[in-house]
Length: 56
Image (cartoon, rainbow, N blue to C red; front, side, top):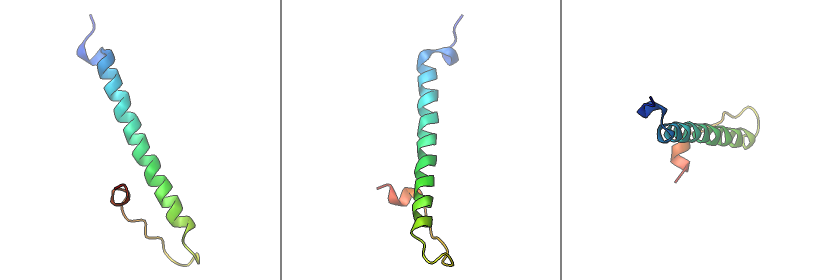
């Protein structure tokens, strides 16, 4: 007997949540990479801030 947990709808919601988390991590990685690339000279520290501040 299938349960609510095993339903396609529950599976879809779980996958969407996983994709959103992955997307946020990728966005943060991209932002940090850009901050690092724009740092010159190398002795200057990066100031990445918060990804959510720049998402608007």
